Amino acid sequence: MWFDLAQLPPSDGYKLLSATIVPRPIAWVVSASPEGVLNAAPFSFFNLFSDDPPVVCLGIMGRGAGMKDTSTNIKARNEFVVNLVPQRLAQAMNETSVEFDYGIDELAQVGLTTVPGHLVGVPRIAESPVALECVPMHFLELGAGRVIVAARVLSVYVDDNAVLDAGKCHIDTPVLDLIGRMHGRGEYAYTRELFTMLRPAGKPGSPGG
Ligand SMILES: Cc1cc2nc3c(=O)[nH]c(=O)nc-3n(C[C@H](O)[C@H](O)[C@H](O)COP(=O)(O)O)c2cc1C
Image 1 (cartoon, rainbow, N blue to C red):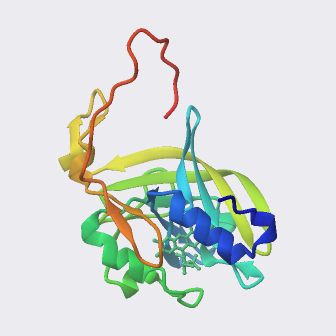
Image 2 (tube, rainbow, N blue to C red):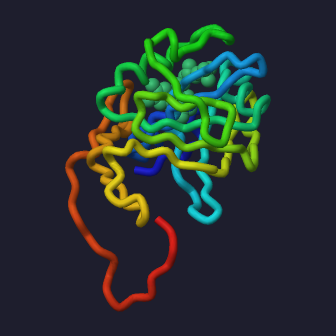
């Protein structure tokens, strides 16, 4: 059965796409207002789109006809940090999706702590094992406060426990125990169950995911 999205309300398009494009990694974005008030919110319209240059994209929808606080802050400060979400922080991540008033520090509200930025003026979440310091490269405006942010990743923090060989940049991904967003109103996936499949031998390798 085909679903023609132009003939359906956006809420049905959301249901079809979010139920099938799974699992989606979750960007737990820390941003700051011009006054320096911190903000944290999760976004599963998120992924890695290029390694050279290193680019991630975020899809931030609107709030009414206006922007969510994360968009406002990223546009104002031109920097943000994507923290990734291990299973043990799922509840805290979920709590930061509550629409707090602008200027309320969601991290403090849910009892999380921060560590000052490495190359940017926004901190990472201390409890998260991975953080990506980002600067926006391009804003694709989708109307009514909705925007896709393509951002260059300046630096990657990985918890020492998950670094197998720093010189070779080898990471123990399963140790990170990251979760993904699945379908429905509240289904999530673990990233614990794996299988191995190498690229076909004898074919020229090409960069990319
Ligand atoms: C797991 C999860 C994923 C989410 N993904 C998105 C997303 O990709 N885009 C979006 O606009 N909102 C998403 N939300 C909702 C935002 O987190 C929510 O609107 C939040 O209040 C925005 O905060 P802000 O106004 O501080 O930016 C998601 C919520 C959860 C729990």
